[in-house]
Length: 388
Image (cartoon, rainbow, N blue to C red; front, side, top):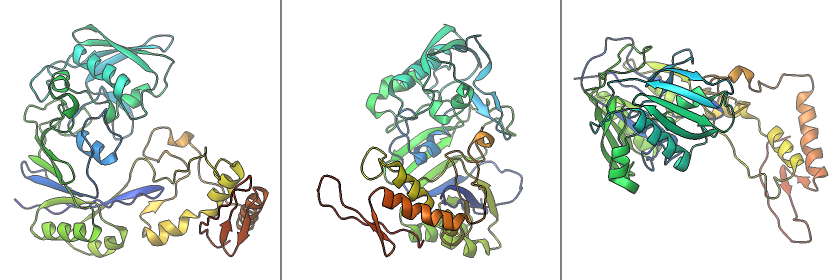
């Protein structure tokens, strides 16, 4: 079976575009293997034991969630058919879907959901559901989730694959190896193999029929198998993609922006462009010198101009970020928007940078800033900055 190839471009600087190359609106065909060529390997596949995006990419296909986001980012039912919130906002009651089973054959019910969420509270690494205190099974298909304080984004957090329901029996069976030797959820694909640093293989869940109402195919999936192949080196990954595409394989890949224009010229490859969630962010530790000084942090943010990076380095396949939230996420309209243009802004920022550094006790020389630690401790460091 031959497929046109699909290319996912891994470009995330600020709020970036994910670009894909692939088949158009053809009728889906059942069967076949989809191979994704990734830049890095998952550390593990336990939703509660990782924060890696590439791990999420895998386990999101193996778990289901109580709620889901539809194409308009509205919260809709999934494994929970309905829910109510108490007047004080501290107790949520969920009525669960019947007839759902985990990949190991055990039933999904209130006891399983309570186990999964209580384990989440105790062990999860990701920073969602911080208000969740405990989950209690009321009857076989009803749970109560009790919060420490009201949580306006609670239903949205529950739609994250990190909050996906996992099999209590599998967790108990595999112990610390859960997420390495196996990962058991209720999702459309099942764990088959995980070789850290090399590949992950998932196979279709033939019993899956409980996809959310807004999807065209509630299950089973059309694709028989998904393989994530780890190829860290960009040139090797591009060559592998082109080789598989030439053979007619179904393949996606993380491709550097420099190769995008060349690959877009291939008539057998169709480009699909969409914004991805989240942002690529430069983190700094505000508790250590010199970034414990607000004036230095302000100067730093004004010194970095993301526009030429987006235009020239990323070939226009990104947009600058002004917040952690991308336009694909709920509440983006409430987030901080672009800095409004104003006359003389460049000269103001130039002076702000120089003044901020001088006020903080630093010297600006030839496009570098040189520092000396307080209390007479000698230290010379330099960081290149844009030409001001």
